[in-house]
Image 1: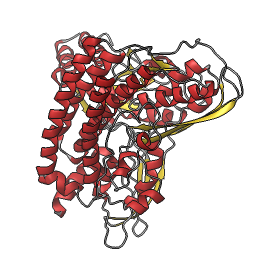
Image 2: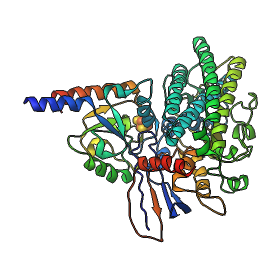
Image 3: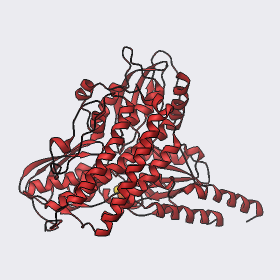
Image 4: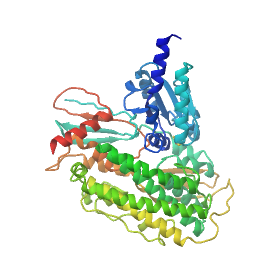
Amino acid sequence: MGIAEKLVRKCRARSPWILLFDTGACNACDLEIAACLTPRYDVERFGVLARGSPRHADILVVTGPVTRQARDRLIRIYEQMPEPKYVVAAGTCATSGGVYWGCYNTYPSLDSIIPVHAYVSGCPVKPEAILKAISILVEKIERGEV
Amino acid sequence: MSFEIPIGPQHPIHVEPLMLRLTVEGELIVDVDVDVSYIHKGIEKALETRPYIQGLYLVERICGICNAAHSLCYCLNIEQLLGKEAPPRAKYLRIIVEELSRIHSHLLWLGHYFHTLGFETLFMYFWRDRERVMDMLELITGNRVITSYNTIGGVRRDLAPEAEQNLRRALDYIEERMRYYEKVIDSEPTILARTQGVGILKPEDAVKMGAVGPHLRASRIKHDIRLDDPYSGHDEVPFNVVTWDTCDCYARIKVRVREVYECVNMIRYALDHIPSGDYRLKIPSFFKTPPGESLARVEAPRGELVHYSISDGGEKPYRYRVRTPTLANLLSVTEMLRSRGDYEVYIADVPAILGGIDPCICCSARIVITDEARRRRMTMTLDDIIRLSRERRVEKR
Ligand code: SF4
């Protein structure tokens, strides 16, 4: 890859802005992600900033099983995000349906709906696990692997 | 003008919006309609297809914040069906974890509420101190948020002596911090301007609308399931029911702050007087319950939580029904958001009022504002509304 692209990648990896989207979570995963933003864990030191609008975000963090009502909005939000975009499935629900497996109103997993770049398991995910997932993803972005 | 303001569920802190259809005349809100239907997963149906012990884990995940209350209510229900009662030590341990999660929930709410009002520093402070409570929950139960502590016939593990020491220290810390925060809240003009006289819910209206929990107690009504219908040894542990007279958003803050002190004292009392003995009954993993029905009520951090079950004598419930406190409180939001007489509600007050009930819906939708006089459409995010709210309130004063 050329110098310019390397530079772009490096910059991109320095400030991944995240967008949290709850597609039907029980709230615990959202709490833990919110806890990442607060003083004890403080993801901002990695340049991560939580945004409220999909148009500002690089990484979409999805929590919860995808319910039928949330599916269309999830797709719409995913489409609104500018390229390049990455998706993190946070929590067992988002990765594989979790405890809601077999409920009539949920889809089995997030990756059956949109492409996913990182899976974080745990019910709920620990803030440390989210930090790790984001830092691994950022390294991969920098190396151009995703 | 027909405003449509969808508020997406992707806000970093407040992730669970609901659909509010506000009818406005200019800035003034004249009518409201509430709809909660988005994150419907079908939990009640799923409970009918799972054995009791598996249902416990699903019930806890109805709501991540009040999971201790949900699992306690479920266990009480099933114990009632089985005709058994948890041993005395288990009851005290249940109180300790229940009150700890109440502290965690109230700190979380206070932090989030001040974030909504634009007071970021206080938000960070509250969430930092909340981590101390999370550590204690992790120490006692083994998990931070979803504790999985209550089980049918008792609790899952005993309290270690070292944990007790740590817990006492954490309680001292929390109490001291809360005294400081109370001073900040009472002396900070912005908070007072944004909350005093906003979102008034009169006691008669609160009862009529079926409000529950701290929200009801902030309207001067003394109602607490722990007092009215003690379910887990609450008749042995003394505590005060906190009420406040002003019936506005400020009262809601004060009630929750004061409740944290009560929780701290209850945990201290429980630690001092905890009986020895078994902490759970021996109940096989898979069992059948005799046919019948049962109902249990628990005071969750947000108010009265009701679980009802019918058994047909099988390994699974025939029907399971859950009524969460937020559902009860949402109705009163319609009352608080409607201007009448000299009580005026502005769009800018919506976050303060809606935040005041501590909405925990685990379901998402958005706010749609309709104004019939003029015709225009406009889209806003929750961020926009919160920003608008911060700016407008300051202008008005
Ligand atoms: S993974 Fe667990 S904690 Fe997270 S949203 Fe799903 S059920 Fe809740």
